[in-house]
Length: 183
Image 1 (cartoon, rainbow, N blue to C red):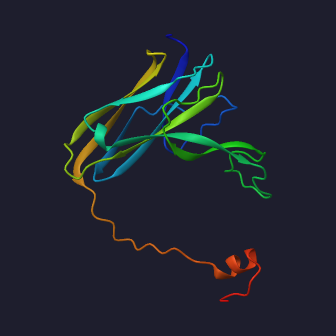
Image 2 (cartoon, one colour):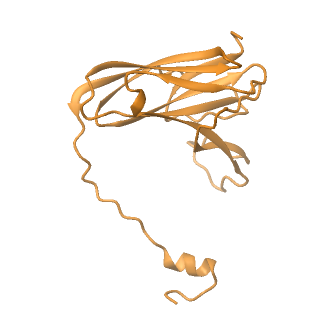
Image 3 (spheres, rainbow, N blue to C red):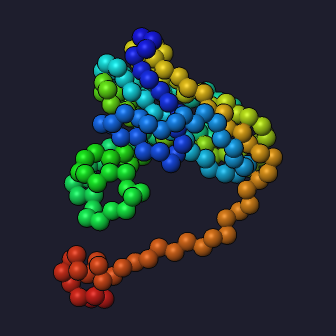
């Protein structure tokens, strides 16, 4: 089954659209601090339909790693006014929702999809390079694999002191339910 699947490691800042060729450069390594939450992606594209694609993680940080599928969501009206930084202005399916992995991943032929890999680096993690190997299998055979190296610096990220506030817009809720504000 070799050659049935293309893979590319990517930054978490990239968007992987199913209906266009992947232009983003590979990102095979990064640096982070102890106690940091770090994310990256593994994009994949099947040459033919793979019905039972699964992923496994091999790493000394394995118990601190979460892999989720980047699901496509419909966007019927992306907006009316755009600046030059907007990736797309047309309706379509956009990569957005992070979903827990099902037993099998979608792998339609010719469509790029991606996996979102989150590493919650322990505050007492060993400094140095940590390999994170992602192995994709179908029908019991390895069809793709990629190794990302996360360099953990010997410095611990300080505790977050930023205060978080969630605003509650009562006027909008009242309008939605056609009731008086504060009723």
